[in-house]
Amino acid sequence: MLTREYLRRNATSWPNRVAYISHGEARDWATVEQRSRRLASALQAAGVGRGDVVATLGPDGHETVELWFASALIGSIRTGINYRYAPREIAHIINDAGVKVLIVHVSCLQSIRRVDDELPSLQLVIGVGTHELDVEYESFLADATAAPELGELTHMDPIAYSYTTGSTGLPKGAIWSHGAVVAAQLNTWFQAGMRNDDVFLHCLPAAGVPILLATFNVFNGATIVLAERFDPAEVLRLMEQYGVTSVLLVPTMMGDLLAHDELPRCDLSRLRLVIYGSAPATPALVKRAIDGFGCELQQWYGSTEGVGGWFTILHHAEHLDALEGRPELLTSCGRPTLHTEVAVLTEDGHPLPPGEVGEICIRSATTMMGYLGLEEQTAEALKDGWLHTGDLGRFDDDQHLYLVDRKQFMIITGGYNVYPVVVENVLGEHPDVSEVCVVGVPHERWGEIVCGVVVPRRPVSEETLIDFCRSRLAGFEVPKRIELVDHLPRGATGKILKRAVRDQVEADIGRAT
Image (cartoon, rainbow, N blue to C red):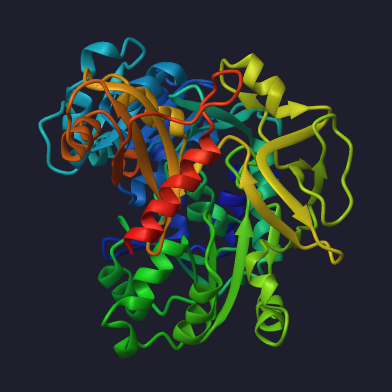
């Protein structure tokens, strides 16, 4: 079965069960299916066919999931664009994917207007909210029938391009197939122990992997509350108001909720599961979460290239084992999931024994088809039947996986992936910068922060360079710290020793505190 068959089954089996709650409005499965079918028909009337790309840009709401299901119905390809991206990154995604129709929230219109003359593939822009565009979302649906033409689809047809920041300096699109998405969502839902009476809170931007979290209730008819964006006070309010039973958070979010003044006064009696992932969590934070939320915890580890199919899970029982004498488990990301083969390999592809560090590689039905238009990067990532994650790790004797480092020094700040070269390219554009090296350094709240280490060409301030980045990068990519130095350490070949730079910055921060 494909996503569209599961959607139809829910509308038939549980037509009156609440599927989604957004902005205080609840919609049952019959309504979600009807609206998705209307959107699919309207898109077809606008010239969208199988294999054409449709995109959404803005905070999450009912239209986010309706576009996902509409695309799944007619075989168009859904692309999410992170509303925190800078205009040039937004333009790159639209052009790289060949987006034909864009659904944009009014809060993001200014970003589109700044690049609207650079988007040759874009034929139709549909606005959500109060705006002056020619086409308004609700009117677009109202004028359509609920009878789209459903052509033949297979498990190997692409369902989405999911963009992840690439080592070349611009986002790159991972191609997800219908079959991989079904496998990823079904297996994740099953192994996490989700139930059809769950009320799951979705509060991560659904531009990328989180779209799967926003729609995996299609497999058993559960309810999902869509938060427009993460705000601690609002999230606590939603959890209490709707009796949320499960939620996925990045560690930064988890820490913000635990530190919020309203948490002790909130009735979270229905909360049974908090899942965390996307970034490292300190053992101290995990212990606070167990006490503060009073429910079970799970940690998930996966990637965009793995179609959001989580490679490992650290279950709650293992959290308890950690507290009862195995504290090292809190630094693990768990054991491989049932649908995933995980190996730690050498550079030439040989498996390593427990305790030895190598690259974490995956074999599963939940892997991408490749990167859109990037044959060389695809060949590097999908080599010898394995998905090469670029993460370095090791197993222990019980098959718990431990992340050791990131092969390409990727920074994870507040759950967002930042490749240093992206920031280095921007800082290098400033006329007062001679050389630059960007590293991630530990931070209590964000997990890591982006730090630029700059050799100036002439006197320049930290504030000037940060302001320069703000107009050219997504908010999470902007450095929170700039170090001005006389030179950068280099190896015998002249290559900058990034690890030495990072170690020095960490040492400087340690001395300052």
